[in-house]
Structure formats: structure tokens, C-alpha cells
Length: 437
Image (cartoon, rainbow, N blue to C red):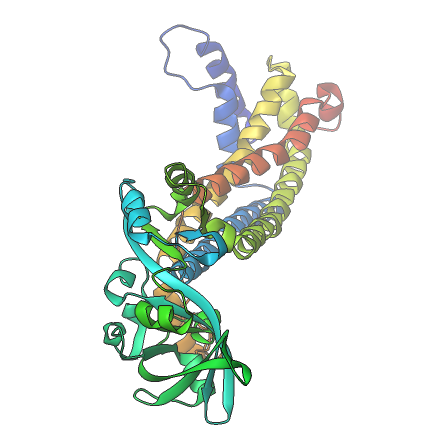
């Protein structure tokens, strides 16, 4: 028989491994590797083995690339949202905070706080000609706002520091400016909800502002519904006196927001309320995280399907090698040794497929910003049109813990796929297998 020599060497290796100081490998590993790389009489088995490797590799590569892109989108959205919102917000009861400098000073003592700024938040109606739009009107101090938000870096027209106290200038989001039909330098009117009592009754408070800037942060929620004015003008318009709505904080690590909020609030009195971005945007980021987990499970099915091919490969290999198994049993191999031989063969398919998938997946995920534009150019399409999506470039953020988890899960699936056919091999009866040889 063609494999008799290797079986004999395997038998000698099994005896040699018991001797102390020998460098011989376990014969189960030797025979398993020999079966994997040997040219088979049944070429269909080799073809299924290659398909199994390719399937596992494609599944692992797809998992890494998709999760990296989802991580990139999540990171991009988080940066855009928190570029306008705050990591931590400390406000007063009834949205009135009297001594904001003291609050900012106490918060600045925390080592993770890198910036603070007071703000006034109120709702108002913005009017230009016959067009009226509702918006959040935020009063800010431009030089301090730059420490906690990135609006100044996303100005499409004008500058954020053009807001001066007493000059009643206003900075609008790009979509809000478009809806009102105004450009930089034009006039709009803000209608405050706080009425003014007159002999004729309660009338709305109106104030004319000059557009001194237009920003575009790439989030429709803010671009269409946020207007910035100087904090002194906001205090006058909304009759707050020296009060502000609260103080916004920026941290060196946004994921420490809960801990920082708890520690800062412990030093402040009970008349203040602290919130962080994980509460104000919890539903949004939770939805993104759930979507990521669901995609992980769905794409993992690709790896599972490829693992079923390992089962088919080993079942056919067991049938093809029954005579060899019988000879090994007659040479003294135990059922557990036979099981280990075919486990080696199946695991090797999984290991090769997994490492190929990890290598190509990481390579593609790291170069997604080059590959996608090249594909768009070749096929003359645009996957994320700027007219529809605010994020027009496909972002990617390779997180190595995700890569490790994907690789380990793939190897485990491959290992479990080998158990049943390997167990069948260990149950082969030598007498029955050699009857027709």
C-alpha cells in the first residue's frame, strides 16, 4: 500500500517518543500533517479542503473589514456629535446657574478635565422675511467655547470669534441658514418665548441679529437646528441677568465621562445637576453597538458554513483512509490517537484559513480609504454620495481586540467541526476495514 512506509515510520515515532531526550514529534501530528499535504486518490476531497480554507478565510476577512468599518462610523459619529455637544454638562436647578466661575474652577481641578465653558441654552423662533424656523439658541463665549467644542473648526463662512457681546451677532448651522435663505452679513430676527408684559398684554420679545458666521459640522441635527450668539446677548434676550444655563466640560478621555461626572458632582452642592454624553445620546450609541453585535453574529455564520465543509472533508477522508486506520490500529495505535490524527488534519485547515483571513482582512481594513476610491473610479460609482450622506468617505478603525476575538472564535469553530468525523475514525473496526483490501 502507498502509505505503508509512513505508517511504519509513524509506528517507530510512537515508540521513539516514549524515550527521554528524543526530538521526535508525536506520530499523531506526523500522520495528520502527512494526510493533509499528501496527494489524494480522491481529488474531490482536496478540492473540498481548499474550499473550506477559502470559506473560513473569506468569512474572517469579511468580519474584520465590516466590524472595522462599523467601528470607523461609530468613531466618526461620536467625534461629530461630541464636537458640538459636551462630554459633561453641569447645570443649575430650573436651568439657572448663578456662580458659574466657581463651578468651572472646581471642575477644572479634576485631572481629566481639559476645558470648560459656560453656556445659555434656550429655544427660539428665527425669522427671515416670511420664513420662520425653530431652533436651539446657545449663548457662548467664543474663546472658551473653542476649548470644549469644534464648531470653530467647521466654519463655512465667517468666524466664531466674530461674536461680540452687545453687537448681537449670530452664527447659524448651514442647513438652518439655507432654510431661512440668509447669507453671511444679512439680518434675522429671534423671537424669544419669554413674553414682555405691556398695557396691551403679553407680547413676544423680538431682537434683530446679524449673521456673522455659518458652520457645517456634518450632523443634520445641529446644522439644521442650532444657532450661536454671545452669552451676554443671550442673557439679555432671555432675561437671565448674570445667570447661565450651565457649564460644559471637555475631558481627555470621553469614556471616563461617567466617573468624572460622579467625582465632580461630589464636590458641588445639591443645587447643581450633572449629566454626561452617555446619557444624553445613550439610545443612539446603544443602537449602533447592537447593530455591530448583530452583524458579528450574521457574518460569523459565513465561518460556520465553511466549518461544515471541514466536516464533509474529514468524513470523506475517513472513508478514504479506512485501510490506513486499520493498519495503525493493528500496529498499536489507540482510538484516541486515531481521533487526534484527524483533529490535526481538520484544525490545520481552520488555522490556515483563519490566518489567511486575518492577514487579508487587516490589510484591507487598514487600506479601505485607498481601495474604496479605486473601486469607485473603476466602476464610476459613488458608494456614499455627498448629496445624501454626511459621511461621504468610508471610515475604518481596526480594533485589535475585535481581531483577536474573531480569530479565536474561528479557530474554536474549526476545532468543534473536527470532533464528530474524528470520533468516527476512532471507531473504525480494523477487521471490517481490511476485509475487502
